[in-house]
Length: 312
View 1 (cartoon, one colour):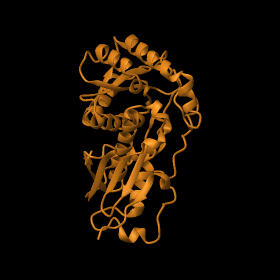
View 2 (spheres, helix red, strand yellow; view 1 turned 30 degrees about the horizontal axis):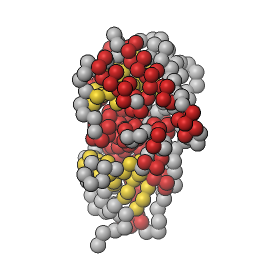
View 3 (cartoon, helix red, strand yellow; view 1 turned 90 degrees about the vertical axis):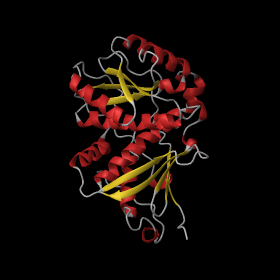
């Protein structure tokens, strides 16, 4: 796992928190640092972590993205779901089972998860491997090689998505319809107002993505279409992306559908045949022999982390 950045620890914080059956403060910081590697829309990293004595709380930070770029916060919640899955992998690789309570407070829709812990008897090598993949994974937006992805790998990716309560549906005979829907949604991103709102972002997603190569195009869908489903979509995105990277594949999530309801309905009617709700499109394929894309910058952990005062 990649080394954690300097811990934003106030004096004596480590002595008062994460006692008993809970990871140390440094372990928590290491896990949250890995979680920051999760993919997020426009690399906005819209998560906020609150640390209590025996738990970690995940909140949505809507200040990270202008409202016009994600009006309903759908893509930002998906991004937080990806970070939640990343942190589960991180804690598992460090010997801790993360017990997740999703949407624990109905009165706070931005409170996405509460995480408590129990020690593991052993660390599974598979979790260590996935944590290593998470530290190095990149989103590959360039064209992919024409080599086909073996059916057994696609079956594995579908199974991984289902484990996280998502569905990965390949657009085979409906590929043209899916491409058309994404291109229609791209028009929203091409507006002057949208492009102006992206000026200060480190890694803005292109208005029109690569759609004419031989990459597998798949829809990541959920049964419902509320905040809990968006969170699950993010966890499934993380699981699929990490599993694909472990197998040498590259991926690129396309968040265009999250912004345009008409495009979502078009994909729901054609690719999904009315069953489920499309959340994003995922490109999957083999990388070219060129240098991999750079690892995009991430926020300092101190910028997304807050310590709650001890409870007496």
